[in-house]
Amino acid sequence: MTDTARPTSRDVARAAGVSQATVSLVLGDKWRGRVSERTADTVRTAARDLGYRPNLAARNLRLGRTRTALLVVPTITNEYFARVYTGAARVADDHGFGVVLYPSPEGVGPARDPFGSARAALDGVIASSMAADALAAIGDGGLPLVMLDADPAAPGPAATVNLAIADGMRQITRHVLGLGHHPGDIAHLAADIDTWTFHERAQALADTLGTTPPTERSPLAYQDARRATERLLARPGPPPTALICDDDVLAVGACKALRGHGLRVPDDVSVTGYDDSALATAVEPELTTVALPADAVGAQGMTALLDTLADHPATGTELPVRLVVRGSTAPPRHP
Image (cartoon, rainbow, N blue to C red):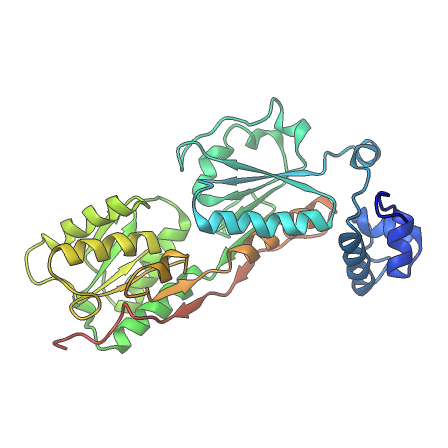
C-alpha cells in the first residue's frame, strides 16, 4: 500500500492477522458469538491505526441503516456535555457510526426535530435527562432510546446510564460533617432544574445531614448563583459555615458572593462544588468537588445503544464518582 492509497479491508486483515471475513464481521458489528472480544479489539485497533474507513454508503444500503446516532444535550458550552460527546463519538467511530450532537436551543426545554424525519435519518438516540423535553418531536418515531442521568425506574428507554449521583453527594456531605460542621450550619445551593439527577442530590444531602438544610435555587449560571447566595446570606441569623453546591459553576458564583460580604473561603465558609470541571482548579482556593467520568458516560451510552441495535439486552449502568478534596473546605472557625 502506497502512502497515498486508501487502506482497504484487506490491509486491515493483514495488519490484524485475520481473514477479510473476520474484519467484515467486526467492523459490521456482527462479531459477537463468532470471534473473540480480543480478536475484535485487534481488528478495531488495526483499522484505527491504518486510518481505515469503510464504504458507509454501500454498507448502509445493505443494512438499511444510516449508522447515525443522535446525542441530545441541554447545551454544548458546558464542559461536562462536551466530554460526554467525546466518549460517545469514540465508541461510535470504532463501530463505523457517526454521532450528531444536538443541543436544546434554550438549554432545557423543547427543541425541534433536527431532521425532516428522525425515523428515516437516525438509528437511535442518546439523551440527557436535562434535555428530555427536546425528545418530544422525535420520540414518536419509535427509535431506540438510551437515557443518561435519568430515573432507572422510569418506563420508556431501552437502557439508562447513570452516575452514582447520590453517593457523590453523600461523600461530600460526610466530608463536610467530618470537618466539624454542624448539620444545622450547612446550607444548599441547588440547581433550579427539575430533573432526576438534581432531585437525587437534594435527597441524599438531606438524608446524610438528617435534616433538610436551608436551600436557595439557581440556574446553572455564575451570576445567578451569586444572586442566590446573596439571598441566602440575607436570611435572618448567622451565615452558614458550609455551603454545598450542586455544580462547580454554582460554587464559583457562591465564592464571589461570599467575598462581597467580607467572608473568606474556607476560613469563614467552606464551599463545595460538583463535577470537577476546569473551573474547580481555576479559582482560588481550588474547589473541593466530586469528579464525574463524563467521557465514560458517553461511551457507555453509545455502547448501550449499539447493544440495543444488535438485539442484545441492554441494562442499566451506574458509574462510580469520586470526592476530590481541595482548599475550599476546612474546619469551622467556631465549632
